[in-house]
Image (cartoon, rainbow, N blue to C red):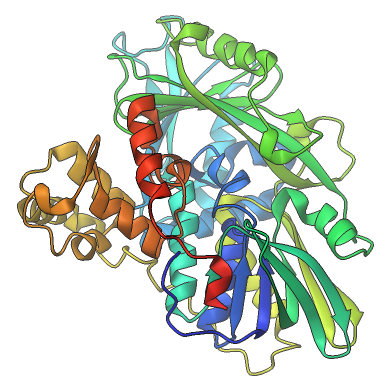
Length: 510
């Protein structure tokens, strides 16, 4: 488990339950404003919804059709801020929208893109435009006209980890593999029981309990706290396919209209893949068990094949993933029509035991959500410090994107035995922190065991010590995306290495 800056007590201002993007964002913001913060996560950081997104920081072009102008405006403003905060994790991405006249007329698309360009200040990304599609396009020849616009790609799981690191830098205690099994409201505040994977328990006190459990927001209130939930959650599953990138594709992403009025993204993924998604399906059951259904797979393949020259089939799929979005139940019949906006609900269980619950939300607006949470809790903490997250880079992100070529060359000189794809991955994962992680490396041998595909024991040790990784899946799927290229033997060697490490109980940091 990562080292903590100071040995914490068992009394906190905030106990945040949930280690997704909203929980870590709130923890970082609150810690930076002077509050003592403890965050607990039952599994790994970003182990549910926050690592199963479409990997986009975007305004949500299709939300305009549902008249959610406020949500789009907020998201577009955040897009600009987040580009500055984490240039290693977030990068501009051009999208091509091929025009299908039978689905939406040109005037409607033009109007939507005009709004998208002007609902918020746009200083870093080019404006949208109408384009002619050339014969070299991967799209079928029937598509002659298209529209281009820009949004941003993001490494979603690493964005969560970066916020957890920011929280830790500000003094917060972050505990993974630790469940808040029970919390009781008393006249002295919240008395909570935390339980780790080995069954060890500890009791902590907090002035405010923050429920940032995502898909479990309603059940946490009803089951763990034995209270009535002020909002109902609707679980909607979204699934994605990953295929090898075809040679005809360049770095453009595509947004495909479908006859059901939904849109599907086809996005360059890492260096060699395309990601296709997402779906919208009502879901019941344990969100951690969500998986791609046969119907979703056929749906995504059908939409893709309706647009591109080179058709795909099921055996082209390299990997897939599914996540469950915790949306506010607004009684819409179509899951795609349910709002992606968030709401924050404060319940005063006793006069001294307030509960703040997060319902809904999306990756792009996490920082704004955290800021709204700070406004809500100022009545509890009147000495709360000022807003600080809009200007502060996330760990690793303190550089100008124009420095990227120079940083790449510098790291390549420092780690001269590494290949270019690995250098690129390290910079995209850690930003300028990469120079510190590998500061003492002077040869490939000095980095310890080599697990394959650029992953060394030196990097694995860093991830376990500083980034809360405890398993091969934590490292291969959330801290990196090397799970796509590791074979079973390599995964087993990594697992065996981790099993030999003396990883203490997370509760030892309390």
